[in-house]
Image (cartoon, rainbow, N blue to C red; front, side):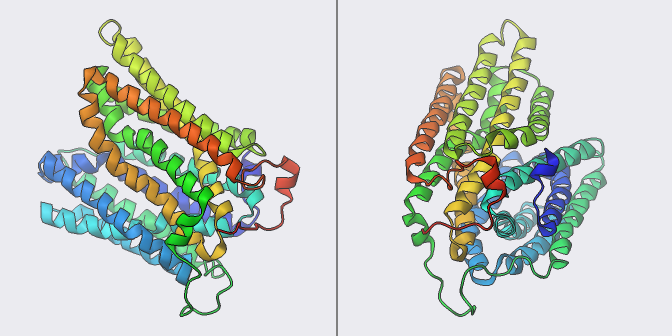
Length: 429
């Protein structure tokens, strides 16, 4: 299955290696930023939250600009500088000692990260045809989670709040890993250049974000993504943890086990899921994702109902919720970018990918803000009902998207035809 999921072009394989290496560094620091700012650097909880929230706002604000620059100058000229900026910003986190310095450094980190994801997706899309693109995006997601899992286990054995130097070490190591994909990209001189038929950088772009938003199928996909991620991904950091600890009354280490179960599920199931969904309707797969996410939240809701009678069963429900959610992610991760790039034209591919990545940024602002009040109402039952209902609504939106796509865009092809597809033919926006 791994051999089948690997892209045919060696350049794309090397890009995936860069994803894995940078993900290991990301995993080193991902779980510990809030702890580092509060327990090591002495920021209050409110100020640490402000710093992390500021990062999200800056990233979201700059993402559209990143998509425009990718289309105008090519992903290579955008991603490499962003990776270098990200490395400088991440390494500088080891030196912060106040709220002001933390805000400044997180601004630098946000500038770097604003175009990396959309740029790398654009590069991968340019190196693959539509027949293999779905498999490659799925493999990319599996490698991302594998790297984060390796990094998280490593840093968990290293960091100690009584020794600030351990945190400084992992941030410096994270900075080094961001240099790896930049170096790989620099060794591939023919990769990541401007797509489309334009011959000069000074020529006007054939449309912009208004053109992207006029694409009715893509607009429907964006609506689906906003609903699903607001009631799904955006709830993991705040809603899931808060419900598990306050309503289900499990210990905090159970939440850590649950997140580990999520990563294990993704790494083990991703290749199998890629194989099973190949040649099948992508929109139906998205509808299944909504149903799977809704099931995960129902299992978490059951943890709250049984917590007073059986603490072990409540803990198992919390872990199961995260694992079930991870299974849904294995379907979403290859299908969502595959549809996005099937709809995109080469001239606007960067903007399409930037808009797709902005979905997670927007929902990341809405989700945490709404989770707290909803969990506080009726012992969390209102929150559970809202997120379950939202995921099911997203499934209905996904099903309505099917009639707006061609068979090729929806992935309704036989495995033979997908494997022999010569070059992608982007749809007209």
